[in-house]
Amino acid sequence: SLRNAETLGESISQSIAEMDPTNAEAYESNAEEYISKLDGLDEKYEAAVEAGNTDTLLFADRFPFRYLVDDYGLEYYAAFAGCSAETEASFETITFLSKKVDELSLKSVMTIEGTDKRIAETIVENTENKDQQILTLDSMQSTTSEDMDNGTSYLSIMESNLTVLEEALALFIQILLDQEIADQLPHPALVLSCDELQNVEPGMFYAVLISSKNHYPQLTIPIQSEWLSTP
Image (cartoon, one colour):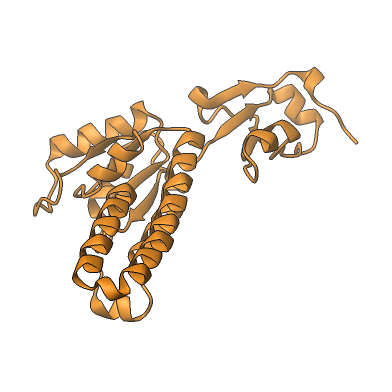
């Protein structure tokens, strides 16, 4: 939890300053700089969740991310509770999670680092479309001193996790062409951004799939002939 890390960082800084008042100013300055970085990353997480198409993560694994989902108002399902030592999911668990993927039209199944992804692969194979991607969030349970010597830090891992989370929650909209229009026109251009969107969310864009096949009914907007224009 980035927010818990901010609280702990401030508390640790104050405690060290009390033990070494001569250098208290340096400790305070370093803490402020670090907490500022945590706060900036926290804002990016909030933005990713707000821009996402889903508010649910499904883990085919243990689930050591309770603070993260609570911080950002995400829902979750998991094969095992917390940091359980279990490694084999029951048939009922696989069936339940596969149905949840279909019910919620999830495009990703999550795992944590260091697992072989067998449970995730089985869940995907038991969904209707069988095309979900398997993504990995780093819980830092496998981080070694060697990793840290090579530059790995809490911030760097959470930045990498943000990229994964953005992909897992990615906004997806399909624009549906009827077959007659699709047969008459070449592949239409993709509209990725607009002035109105940039005014609200600078730097953001949304990818739009334009297709004559209705792959995702829940996320489809039928397009009208009069909407189309050619150069």
